[in-house]
Length: 368
Ligand SMILES: C=CC1=C(C)c2cc3[nH]c(cc4nc(cc5[nH]c(cc1n2)c(C)c5CCC(=O)O)C(CCC(=O)O)=C4C)c(C)c3C=C
Ligand SMILES: [Fe+2]
Ligand SMILES: [Fe+2]
Image (cartoon, rainbow, N blue to C red):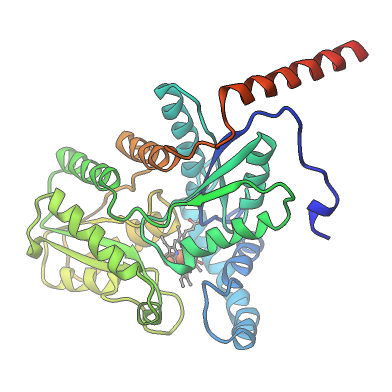
């Protein structure tokens, strides 16, 4: 039964607020095979992620993928797991706290900020419930994927909208579709890379590696590939790189189908074979370091490049908690919230709400 049939949700005297829900992919609860299996089951059962005929895929998923991959992936997660937990979760939590602090420093009315994960914990539903309990009647969804893909951004919004089916008193909702060309995001990445080069010297070749997608997504109209190319072009231009000095590639291929090309592993192999002295790899599509950057790029990528004959390999960390990135997040948020005032959010109504709240708490106090 939908929850709204059971619960009256209208609270008299509650002051309306604005909420921001940061959303990321999610990660297993522990680096163990059972926890990774639970996570992969939820992730890979999403029809937005694997678009092959349902029945066929559920058979493959249950008979082959979930019987072998959890153990292999858990071993990889063990290599990158931190004392506080999964890097993706800890960075997302830190970004949320820093954004709160940053907006707090700007003064004025502050939105309520929290985060939710599309798969695993804490969920998008829990994040929305938290915002609702705080009295938010306007909610901004901010999926932390710079480039739009149906398998990431769209499914994150789907999950949020699906949870709203449970509410009687729904908030107004806005969502950020992509920020692949946002000047603040590009500037933050350019600074991150420049700082790295200042401390560690410059490479002979620079690789920008994005998460891959099946090639059919491009044919079906997903803008992801084009968003990645635009991000790469803007970042290369901010770094004043010539076209011959960098390569754009796609990592994390899953399954046997053709994915977006060139594949990062092939690019690293070719660069190694060509005797490149030093390659630096940066992952603009990930705003937080995670399994795909810390294991696949920093560890596996290095092995691939060195085994092919390359000399030196560096993985440049993702934006994580860098100052310009938190500022970019604050700008993205503020730009969306500006001009979204509630028509009834007048000083008179706020005063009225405060009066109701005060008289109610006085009555409660008298009872005790
Ligand atoms: C940044 C954008 C991402 C896109 C686009 C994306 C598409 C996509 N991914 C898979 C399969 C897997 N991805 C896995 C991990 C993973 N993927 C992203 C981001 C994107 N995925 C992140 C941030 C992570 C890391 C999560 C973490 O816990 O650190 C995994 C799980 C690990 C493994 O077993 O390899 C799978 C599987 C598909 C099929 C897909 C698009 C169709
Ligand atoms: Fe992925
Ligand atoms: Fe991977």
